[in-house]
Image (cartoon, rainbow, N blue to C red; front, side, top):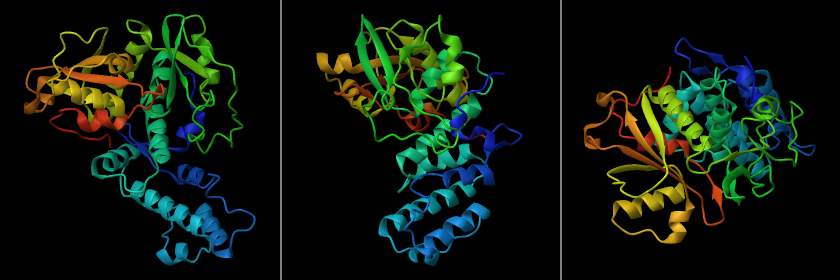
Length: 335
């Protein structure tokens, strides 16, 4: 079995009997390796003491006074956020259950980066036996913003950070520990070079063709169906469509902010202008394998999924929308 996405820390976790990821001390310690949590050379004694104590015992209770004693205000804020995140993870049996709680009941001050890292490691678990590099590359859209470009008649998505357009999305905390660096060379993943994905998976330097009617959008549909099977225990078929005509949006899920705006407009009967129409990257029809899995309010109509890029051609997929927006009768987590 080929390995991939080492930087997510998958090897530092354990699985329960149902396949969910269990939080381990080793996985928690990986967060203490984040640059913003390692006390700088001028850190006060209280911050150094807190960090050292957590490295020795990452589940140890941390009192509010322990954080309040830190002299630097930015450091105090970082530790408040980190401790709230850690405590929330420890309240649940699995990382999957903790993630579902976050997206259903409010993320609060949890940084989007932390959510992306949770999605990253959950996907790595979910796709453990996947042998198709195209599905793996498509799944990167769940936790890595993409820059979308037209190239020789094709719609190509490349990792935004890798090509230098989204410096606000840093690498995962294990990347530096593993000696992983991001190179500037970008190749479009295809049948001819699929074999090199495994060794380059942590570099996020392979682009994907999302042109309508080609395998990239189908691979993303496969990744989404696996996501729903793993997180909600429902079997669905997700079929990519090539045309928005004759589509009735009785129930739809916008997979990003722009797609939600477009779906709202269509649902209200508003016509789409050319600019909005051209921003749609993918349109899918979702059907439940077992009709009893769908909520009664969904009726017999199919569910449509919309994926779109922003006016600056940035694609920020929100996988949580698929979990919270789908009309599922019994939304349960793994574990």
